[in-house]
Length: 419
Image (cartoon, rainbow, N blue to C red; front, side, top):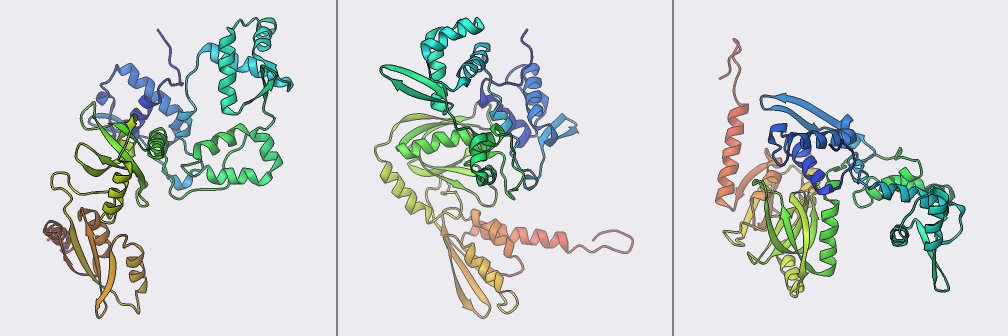
């Protein structure tokens, strides 16, 4: 029977597990129904080896729940990068890796044939010449080796530049890499360079470090490639049902929320003939579905529709692209609270603000989904004079205010009872 290994063959399965059990799901062992309980134990042990110091265990009536708990502004490196470093390899892969690098450590260039012969002569390691050639090409593509031409023969040598030598040659480079290792776009690359040089980020902390972006990096790369090449993709998404669902879309843009850190794919969905959005962490994978002939037309459609989106909602599919004009009037004392107006102007997005009376300012916006603006509008409670627009949102706002009034207006009697 095969023993436990921390290495993983398929990152998609690990991503799925971390997402469902450690970040969003708060599930227990009994909820793992894809394979045996042994598989659950193996996956759990792998994640614990990467994230042990950041895990919280809670015992409930359903069983033990495990979740990641950390203050992202207090960590200098994303712990989920360890999952990306845990890819499995065969015995021949790791053997060939060290033997080839040992032979090439003399700094001279070698041909494929000479390296194959030296492997057999020096280490009694017999490899097919094609296997050695494939490994050398792989390392040349990674930048570990430099290919050189000598007549018709292709030679390989170790690259003289390493992260350690570059950081020694350019002292300020290490600090620059430490800074950019905090950013999602360069994070894993920076983390890898620092580790190769025996360094770590000891200088910078990022207030809003969203570690879950690591789980989306592969999907994000697939989508940005499709956007650049103007191609369609088939999305395989997580869902309430075990297998989720699939759909074919035309990727147009990637949006990122400055409030929650969530990232969204904005796309045209031919099945519904409308622009739609999908959260990246709900996308399992994206597969190429061919070129899109009308890409420019769909991009123009997004440009027109984006003017009526306060966030990423393009309205309800069943209702079509209905538009709602919302007006919110607030009272602002400019002598004591000028910053309120400044904030209103700064955060208005696709709306506009105008003065409509003595100390009265009205925010007006036309959107597909008025529900998107309501959480933001509620941050002005205490200053709101009136709201008009969507009857549904008006009624919901009044119900919320009335319920909050009842909750906070209760009086405590001398005997401790609450009226």
